[in-house]
Image (cartoon, rainbow, N blue to C red; front, side, top):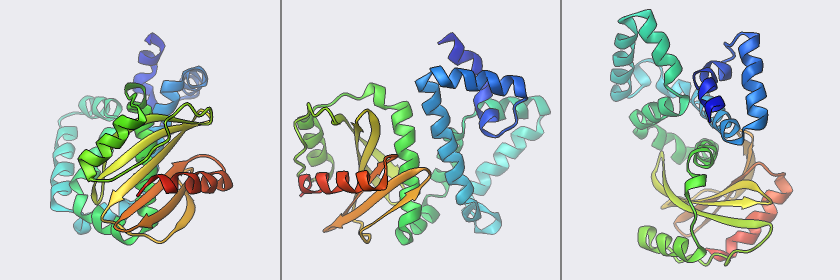
Length: 250
């Protein structure tokens, strides 16, 4: 833990490529032996890539008023002094910055995700990485508990495997937010690797599969619900897993 704390303020400049060689090597050594910090770096890199890909949504007069007000406020804080600006920049993780930007731009993002499966999938891939980095260690639910949560929250009937499969291990579920509102996120490990199944209510997309932010995303819809399977595994394996889980959702 002490080693993790010692590199905490170096993570964001490390991701931005702004560290001197000695500090960069120090962070890289730590990441090779610390899975939680490695997951954090993956999460922040994913969010950075996601936000960079959407920067045109937030420029100038096209940005929502609420976002421009927030940005102006942060600029005012920075103008109070270089030391404060430097400290704010290094303490505030990219994930927190994403919450501000994505929250302020909610209406605009909803319009973007409703038009583009790739924008929607990129947002879910970022959620996948972030949830596993931050929440996975605190979630442990049985299949019965997840099924009850899906019925109580969304009114969906879901028949999950009972568990005990050496290849597919259920971690649990949690509600997530994306541009279109609240969605279900069921978290698994497949052969030890993180895998997410997202379910979006009142949404319909064409069946397809593609790569985004370093993850394969399989998309299919049934009625007024869309499912998205997210994993870093090979396309053929992701397609097989998607076919395997589809019959469990009614």
